[in-house]
Image (tube, rainbow, N blue to C red; front, side, top):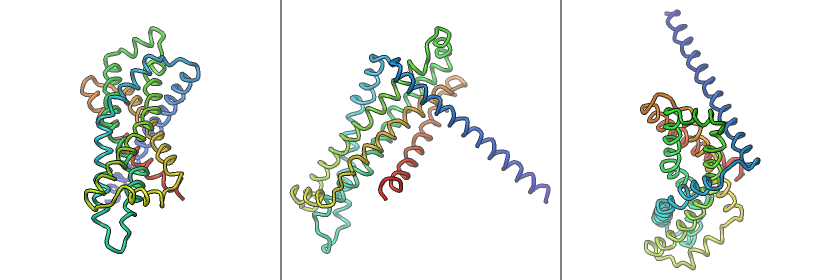
Length: 265
């Protein structure tokens, strides 16, 4: 019995050590990829045409879904907030609840989750297909750095696009919250914005943009890293994409949980 317990503990320690080494290796590869992208930007090796294509694809083509998600977030928050209020709470406080919820939380997180599915998964699948078809090896043999040509434009585009999309989502969410508050509780736009101004902090908008910047770096960085590490043909591309979406989602949620204790205390 003791021997069986020792075997279980040994296998547990072995599994933990192996996963720890894999995590450390992945962290090192992510850091190397990030440094390579920064070096490419500093040296002016990022092609503007490729960057513009990524900005168009990540940003402009993502606008419709971001507008829908932002509007729904504002509507749901306004309706649920109005439902929770009682006669002892001034109705104009609903404006503060909606604006704070949208700007501090819903806008950045919902936009990031949408882009994980639309942008992150596609980056991983695209680069993973290039990896398993040996196109990346062909680029290296021709003296072209995949980090400069493929990774850097996507990472820079993510850093630019996500704060802009979050700003759009915040604006749409607030405006839709105004409409929903009027329809569900009868709160006038003047009362809504009075409550919003009453409890507004100037740091809120900066906080939202800092979140968006962190998410905008994490999503393409993880997606590119997963694509470069893909192996195993078409099945490997599917597995890499699924794993990358899971890791990106967890990373966004962990970063979201770290922001309040770091910046709101």
